[in-house]
Image 1 (cartoon, rainbow, N blue to C red):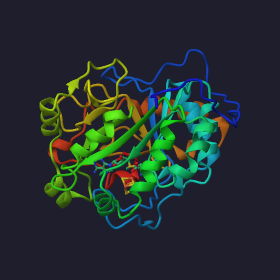
Image 2 (cartoon, rainbow, N blue to C red):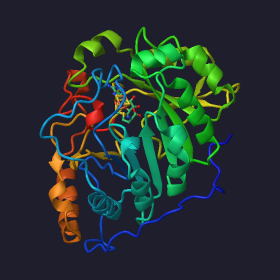
Image 3 (tube, rainbow, N blue to C red):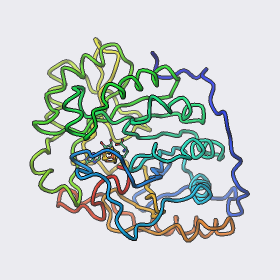
Image 4 (tube, helix red, strand yellow):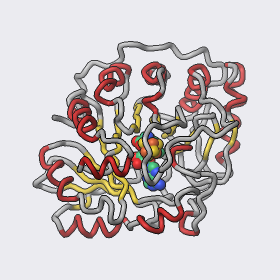
Length: 353
Ligand code: SAM
Ligand code: SF4
């Protein structure tokens, strides 16, 4: 099992990007007034989800009346062309649950055919992993994150509302042999709920070259009482890891928000994502677009900037890019989570995390 196997064949299907009338060689990369650039886009391709994660959609997904339909394929293509032209190099597909989209492989293949996009990732609850991961890989998916909040069957079912852990773990084993550039597992830290799972995770990581990223629970508009009860600070996990012999790795220049730990006795690694830690936003390199086509400058921002009206025709690409440049000027230095400001984000399924 390897982290990456560049020899693996990819892309069964490619879709030519449309003629794009807005790009030229003088285009600047997107940057904000704090000097941050944005090579990374997280695109939610669907709001719906079939899981009931207790911290996200405890009552399941409810389609609120008046919510916009998810962007169509041609709208997504125009959006990605515009972002790629101003420096987006890494795309992550998310949701809701992105694998519920029937045209997911086509979205992946289309993104892969757009000049400039080098990495295509997806974050999934893994419900269709075993059945579909070969297709996604063949279409050009390069990075895969799967959410697994517990390694105990009953606990997993309690948190997600689905007794699917065994199936999911089989899917991950299979994915590890497909030559992805990275396969990572996400687990949200929940006090008194899954914080006893660490010995199981250590066993899991002993021989598998996979990274498990523990994410500190974030407060959203909908989960206030849940947050008060289950939030646990990531630094307590980091102290535990250090006592168990895990060592913090030096930060790579293009690293994401995770602090990464390794241990000589384990093939796998552990990442810790601590959104409440000091300096978390300093290196922010990502923008988000919701399933309905709103640009979000911050996971917890107060504004959604509608891009959809400019996704209806190739002729609007220059105007689209101008809107992106213009809006970056109002991106704030950091989120207001410490003050309990969750912005527009009622739950992370609405924006994709
Ligand atoms: N449905 C997919 C999944 O669960 O992987 C993709 C969307 S989900 C919103 C993306 C990630 O956000 C998941 O890893 C999930 O565990 C995480 N997440 C959701 N709500 C969260 C919260 N309140 N705090 C921290 N992480 C959260
Ligand atoms: Fe669905 Fe992902 Fe939210 Fe769980 S975390 S309810 S899988 S969107």
